[in-house]
Amino acid sequence: MSRNRLRACAAALAVAMPLALTSCSSSEAAGGSDTCPGGEVRFGVEPYEDPAKLEPAYRVLAGALEKKLDCPVSLQIVEDYSAEVLAMRNKRLDLGQFGPLGFVFASQRAGAEPVASFGTADGKPSTYTAGIWVKKDSPVRTLADLRGRSLALGSPGSTSGDALPRYALTRAGLKEGQVRTTYSGGHPESLLALTGGTVDAAQINSQTLATATKAGTFRPAEYRRIWTSEPIPNDPITVRGDAPPAFKKAVREALLQLSPKDVEKVAGFLDVTPPGPMVPVTKESYRPMFDLAKTMKLSEEDV
Image (cartoon, rainbow, N blue to C red; front, side, top):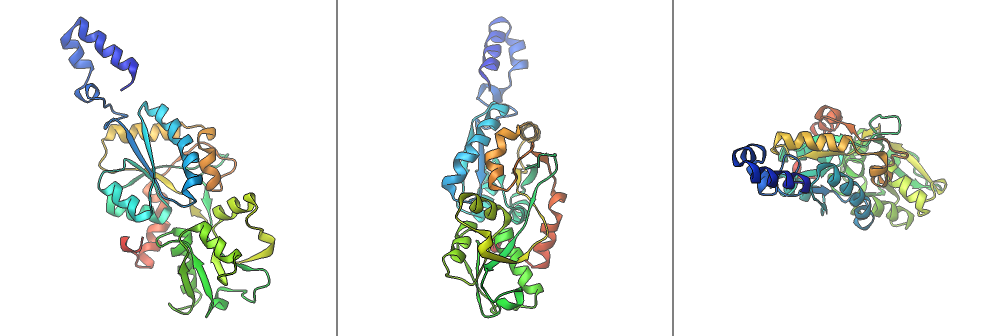
């Protein structure tokens, strides 16, 4: 509840008790409101990049959201996909940003509802791609050439770092075990496995590629991409499905009113440069991810 609202309620109480009871709800008296039902908004983000780099970027976004909602926003960079899904299911998170495939299971298991995603400068939903890279002088030219070789994936349940590369290997006729796949622990770690020479190939999505190229830790000219995916819809920010309807409405409005400046630091990690305002998304926006999970027979245990 804002200070101005508190003053208004106090003034009303001093003049007429019945009117005060009408205008000041019991939730407001306890420090809650439609935009701040529990006294704070708990916002979880999966660690798709180094958490030490993500946290300051998301604090800018969370601070802007806090002003729009007139409610403290508690930011949490969670341990992994499954921890975030579980936290929302157990009502320890009100909002959560999930990867596209992570959202599938958050929707099924925790009732997560997509609200907004990151828009381009021309106001369209942004996308990214998964990719598999090898060193420029590698004899590997196609996915089939990976037979008997090593491939670094990101982390289990990742859209671009796990599911889509594995699906691509299957479609290329490679059976389980014919490629020595290992999970490096994340997108940056997968890239490092390739540049460090510990694997023959690695998944590097367009977001990590842009960040590492800008930082000078990856020189694309020294490597070759042998596969790239179709465009993937960017991460949704979701709200817990059993949250009060008025809160869901307030969150949607607040996110869609954020300025490009409010989200540009986060958008930079998602390869949305320059960013526009956030754009509305629905469950249908991620239908290809639901279809992928069904095709690959994935479940929440795979996240």
